[in-house]
Amino acid sequence: MENLINLKQLQQNEHLLLKHIYTHLQLKILKKKIQHKLLDSNEKTYYYKFIKPKMKALLAFSGTEDIIIQNKELMIPERIMEAKRILQQMQRKHKTAKILISGSFLFHKKFQDIDVFIFTKYHKEDYRWKKIQVNFLPESALDSLFFSSLCQISLSNFIPEPRKEFTISLKEALQTYEMLVNEIINKENYQIKLREFLLQTEYLSKKVILNPQQLYLLRKKFNQNKILLLLQKYFAENLALNYPKKELIPLKTYLKDYQKLSKEYKESVNLNYYICTYQEALELAS
Amino acid sequence: MQAEEGKEKIKDVIEQDLEFEGHFNKCFENLKETQQQELILWIKDCKEHKTNVIQSKLDREVIGFVKRFGSNLRAILTKRKESYFIALFLDKHKYYEIEMKKFGF
Image (tube, rainbow over all chains, first blue to last red; front, side, top):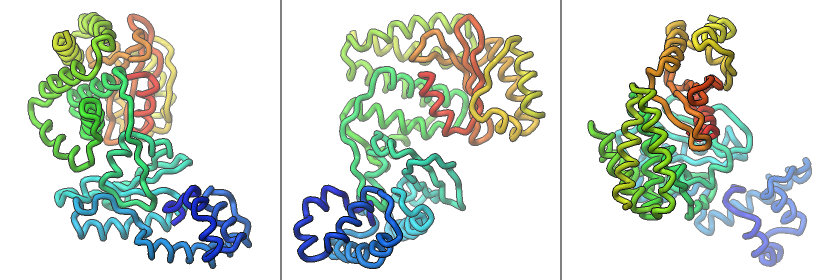
């Protein structure tokens, strides 16, 4: 519940809250709790016995539920119920953490696995329990492009405040592309990397942050035999169109490096794809 | 095979000393015997230029080789171009992603 209100809201409505709902002491304790400060045993009793129930009633009255659902209309109704149950279970286990459920499970019948994301200050090992995959992410992940996409179709115990502006450097874009090509060639499960790549590239070209469903549909278009050629064309065009000519100059350096490396590492097939893609991008740009 | 024995075998293959990073010992000892052999063979392939190579975006003189073991383990072998091997990293996928970013791969 503490994740659903913030200090700014409390400060803005302090006058009303003091006049009708809380005493000075209660408000002081609530502020402490929201700022994640430690409460002593008296304060804890006050908080759980008097302050929290009142806040819960206020939130319920204003239509704010304990669980925030984003883009409910895109979800399968039965899956919402199941996700709610899991979120409540997770909340009991990880009491103060920000928890979010997202992924294809919410909007596609075919998918049974449920992705739970727990944002925490402390490092913890991910784990799997039956069909639930629990991923622990640092709180800094709340500022990522990944989160801005993920939270668009989600259930959470906090109000997501996704960032809208991102800068994707040429180096970053190339790194993601190169790793994706490498994973495909090595016959690994490349779906996560493909998602990251498409999310970045679509943002780069259209300044749009795709939601998980849009991303799923776009991924489907690429999942075919000629995926490497499709990616090559798609990425070359996007490089040429989205970076000014001046910023593409490092591509020439990488091209030379890769041509030299490919003479030494003749069996490294990935280098040929990088070379072709960057050559095509430079040709298109000029 | 124990981690220390594995480390010695790897050093013999590349004929030089090497840093071992990530939770190498724990991960290596958790590999099946066949996977341990696969790791050593892969390192031999890297040395003989028989695998895919990637180049760092942070330092163009650094190259790397990556390999997946099982569903969650990843190895990264780093090397200075036309020179010595730097380190062998072996850990879970989550830490691998962090390491890859650190090296600029």
